[in-house]
Structures are given as structure tokens and as C-alpha cells.
Image 1 (cartoon, one colour):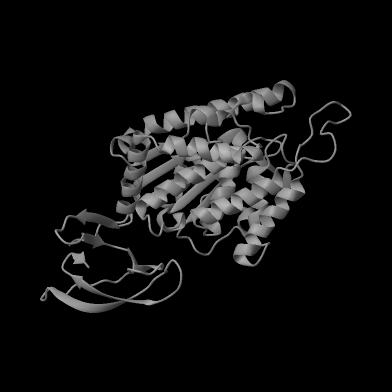
Image 2 (image 1 turned 180 degrees about the vertical axis):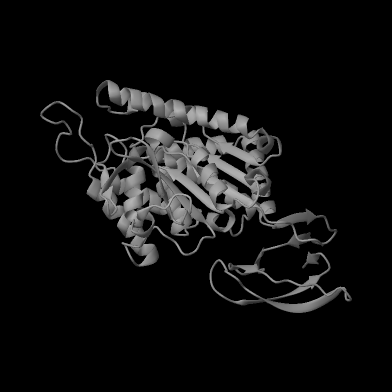
Length: 402
């Protein structure tokens, strides 16, 4: 059997404050559709993850800290609960301007703890020697209000001094310092000021595409794409922002408009990907948009609305199609074949298995077949079991396991 050619999978995560939790539950369903018993980590299936604002924080957790989705949900809930704690004083200046409503130090502390728990170094750099899953973060430069890109990898076209100096927590603060929520942050050897990327790139799909074109430039990117997954957080609600006069309202209007237009324009520009079932956009409509970006008390409601949306037949089928496309892109395919006594499976690529009467699940690789015999007993190393390292013994026949 010929080995399927591996292609690129890209993930884009919109900004949306606490509603970013909705994105995680959507992604959770996608990964569980790939393997219900032992859902893989997103970093195992996506070659690049881009995020803006809280979508950027999620991108860091999934791509740089290598969390699985459940770990990310727990970390995100903890971070959001700690970060969205109101300041003790009235957030109004003497001149009557709205000040940042939340304590930036709380957000920094929460980020540092999540990083230290994972990497044992709260000041670890965003730069990652492991480029199997690259991370792209959108932020906004102070003064010019242009979109800046923070990366976990080197981009030869745009050599930034931040690549060698920016810490993970600094990048997280830069992408998530939403206007009127948190203070801007000044980082880097040149003292650059940043606030959250949602102002100019709430949906980072275009930046993700441009970054991917720079990195994988040997051939047209369209020919290298397996799947592009873009996940929204509902339509932003203008009345939920406290803005600073007319300028703030204009900025907010641009942010709301940009999210919708970017989604539609990208789909039109890449209609071949849409037609070939390679572009997947998930976004929960309706009630989710009514929840303010900072409403931590609404976490249960966010989850409930998202799960209700995911239970719809059309959405379930779309999630399954997305999971199938992601698996195919990485050369992993499992197709169930009927059997009178037991289910038989035809498999290629990475195999995850669970031993009967045991809770542990295992990943198997380097499975070979004896072309001259119907069956043979083999031992294969476990690459990364879901619980602990073991050897797995089994019978492997021609195109099936049992």
C-alpha cells in the first residue's frame, strides 16, 4: 500500500476574551473525532497555529507549551478567572477617561505560573527549537497601530530582534492587552509598546496564510495544504466595550467589521480549498455574541451554548469531515470494515490502541507486514502512550490488526 503524502494543517484562532473557551470546546470535538479513546494533541496535527488576543494565549498553550485540549481548557479557565479580577479603584481618570479595568499584574502572574508549571521556567522564550508546530501571534504596535507578528520560529524575510529576546509571557501579554481591559506592555531591546492584536487582526487567518507562504515557499502553498481550520468566538458585541470617545468606537467598529469580512473574503479568495473540503470555519452563532469578553461568571453558559451548537447534525458532520481531513493530511487513516465476529480495521500511519480490560491507551509505529505470510507476531515500540511507556505485543496481518 502506498504511503499517503503528508500535507500541511493550519489552525487560526480568533480573539474573543472569555469566549475563547468556545474555540477550545470546538477543537476538543475535532480532536475527539480523530480518536475518541485517546484524543491527540493539536500540536501533533497542526504545523502552524495562529492566534489573536485570547486566541493568541490559546495558540501559546497548544503550540508552544504542547498542551492537549483538556489541559488547555483547565489552564485557560484558571488564567481567565485570575486575570479578569477588577481593580479595587474606580477605573476613571481625573480627566474622565476610562482606565484599564483589570490588573495587568494578575494576567502576568497567571501566564508565568502556567508557563512554569509546563516548562519549569517562567521566563522561557517564545522562540522554540522544535518547529514541528510553529506559533504565530498578532499584536498591535503602539503609536502606529499597525499589526505586529510575534513568532516562535525565525522568519528570514522579516528578521525581528524580538525573536531572540521576547519571553512567552511577554508575547502573551502583548497579544492579549485589550484596549480598556489591560495596560499595554513594553518589551524588546528597543522598548516597543504593544497592545492586543484584535484591533487590526481579530481573525488572524490572513496573517497565518502569509506566514505559511514564507515558511513553505518551495511550492505554491495551495498545493501543500491539507487542511485549514479557522475557529471564531461568536460575533463581537459593540455595546460590551468601554471605549475612549469617538476614536474608541471607530476602532471597535473596525474590529467587528474586520472579523466578518476577513472570514468571507478568505473563503472567496480560496474557493478551491472550500470546494475541496480543505477549509473549515467554525463559529457559534446566536447567544454567544451576547456574552461580554470579560464575563468569567458566564463560563458555564459559554460551554452550554457551544455544546448545543456542536450537537446539531450539520455541525457534527462538519466536525467529522474536519477530523478526517486532518488525519488524511498526516497520512493517518482508519477505516472500519465489517466482520461477522469482530470489527477489523485497515490502518496506515500512526496507530493508537487500547488493550482490552486496561485503561491505558498506546500509540504504535513502525508496523511492518510479512508479505509472504498471513500472520506473524511482532513487537513495536510505543512512541507516546497516553499514560505510561510500555511495550505492546500483537498480531499484525495483511492490512488488518486484531
